[in-house]
Each structure stands twice: as C-alpha cells, then as structure tokens.
Length: 331
Ligand SMILES: NC(=O)c1ccc[n+]([C@@H]2O[C@H](COP(=O)([O-])OP(=O)(O)OC[C@H]3O[C@@H](n4cnc5c(N)ncnc54)[C@H](O)[C@@H]3O)[C@@H](O)[C@H]2O)c1
Image 1 (cartoon, rainbow, N blue to C red):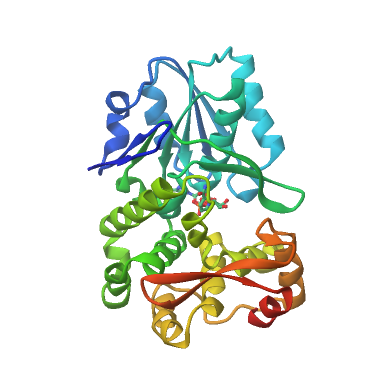
Image 2 (cartoon, rainbow, N blue to C red):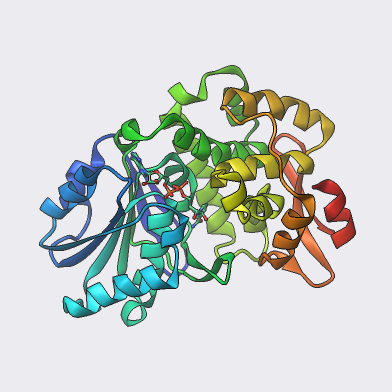
C-alpha cells in the first residue's frame, strides 16, 4: 500500500509493505552516495541490506538510546558526509527507530542546506508516528528536541517485517502513541485496542495511525493548530521522561502516564484496562516537584500558561491553556 502525503511544497510517498526493505533499490534513488545511519541495537542486517542495494553506501552506526540525539553525534554525521565528499545531490537514510530518524533527518536538513532524506523506520513508534511529518531534532541543554528543523522525508518505507526482532516492551512503547491517536481521532481504532489483542494486529494499527497522522500533518504541517493535538499526553509525559536517569521509562510509556490526568473519568476508566493490557506498570514513582520543574523547562511551557490537550470523549479533544498552578494540580 502507498499513502501519499499531500503537502504544498513537496509531497511524498509512504510505502507500507511487508518486505519492502528488500525492494529499496526500486523504491528509492540509491544510485549515488548514500549515508546510512543506524544504531547498535538495531539488527545490523537491516542497514547491511540497504547498503548492498546502494551505489556508494556509507554506513554509520551510533550508540542506541536517546543520548545519540545530541549535537555531538549530529556533528559526527556531518563530518562523515563532508570527509566522504557528499554533495547536495546525495542522500541520507535512517534505518532505526525515532532516535535514528530524528538525528539523521536533522543532519540531512542541515548538510549543505538540505539533502534528500529517506526514513526506514524499524520500531513500532517510528512506524506509526515519528517517521512521517518532518519533525527532526536533537536534544540540547537537557531539553528534548530543542534544536531541530522541519524536514520532510523524500520517501518513507514502512516494513512491518522488521518489527519481528523488536522486544515486546518496545512494541508496546509504540502502541501507546497509536493509542493516543485513537483517543484523539478514531473510536474504531480505540475499540480494537479495547476488545482485541493489539500485539497481533500491528499491520492494521500501523495503517490506521499513519492515516491519522498524515491527515493531521496535511492540514497543519508546522503545528500552528490541529497538529498540537498530537502533544496529548506529552506535557506531563515529557516532564516524567526528562527524569530518565531516575525512572528508566521509555518515551511511549511516559506519554501513556501523561495521558491519564488529561482525560475525563469516563475515558480514563476505559483507558486504564488498555494500558494494563499493553503492559504498562500500574504505578510509577516520581517527585512531582521535579516533574513540574522539568515541564516548565520544556518548549511547550509558555509565559502565561501551558497549552494542554484534553480528551473528554473518545475520538475528540479540546485544547486548553492552563495556569502553572492548575497544571501542577494535575500531576
Ligand atoms: N519526529 C517525531 O515526530 C517524533 C514523534 C515521536 C517520538 N519521537 C522521538 O522518537 C524517539 C523514540 O523512538 P523509538 O521509541 O523508536 O526509540 P529508539 O529509536 O531509541 O529505539 C528503541 C530501541 O529499539 C532498538 N531497535 C530499533 N529497531 C529495532 C528492531 N527492529 N529490532 C530490535 N531492536 C530494535 C533500538 O536500538 C533502541 O535500543 C524519541 O527520541 C522521541 O523524541 C519523534
């Protein structure tokens, strides 16, 4: 299946197909210098396969984890391209999850003011969400995604076969982002989460989530309105996530905890059993004051209040500006 992202400046195809990595040479323009970025937790055969299909490949493997979304590692990628004579007509490919995608996308956006960027997501989170939409970034000064650029990929290849090597907790991590989209926009998708085994329905969940995200990005590419809804769960979630060293939680898990205070009682009562089914631990202990302080450092904290997304009935949302005091009471 091919979904087309319709954007005013440059639209692109999102190919969703079991086994499409093996067809990458017919789907992408790889007959040039191609920087292939992966991390050391992604099975190395995925980047090796892409490399074998490329004209002049250069594979760079970064350490897995959020720590690689840094200016230091971004500079390493620029250095690799420069020292191998990459020109403006060459390309960069991400083969990995959201970390590799955000990092490589930002390197592609900045090298020579922008070269072609292909995203080949290998986690559920990146296949349902982060690989499309053009947000690229690294973390800086202890703040997530604070330095980056909007850089739409030239094409995205979503190959669900690559998820077979992904641990169950990482699968659930991505499903929390899909669940977020279901709560905001799609009661039928939410029912699937409630009534079926989501782990055995990944292709359907990926397709439904991509369709939602595509529609949102087409309507509001630069996040001036509708796209803000996708921050549902992220305000408190990012606050929890930035205490990473203390709680060891994954991004999607933090978003899942962050959604709970932003729901009506009725929605929360339906959401809790789904979160348990996906394996989210029942409790997480954190220091409210520290989460609050981290949230106020976050980019969504604005003078005069913080924009928050609420879901009071499944499939719809409202955007409300909360005072710092009101927000603190929700944590
Ligand atoms: N750009 C966006 O719109 C957007 C949206 C949501 C999240 N994000 C970002 O995405 C990042 C999180 O992404 P993620 O959850 O994919 O994490 P990740 O990229 O860190 O990947 C998770 C782990 O899985 C391993 N892995 C990846 N693919 C694998 C595979 N097929 N088999 C086995 N192991 C594999 C990786 O080595 C890593 O250890 C965060 O930095 C977040 O800020 C970006």
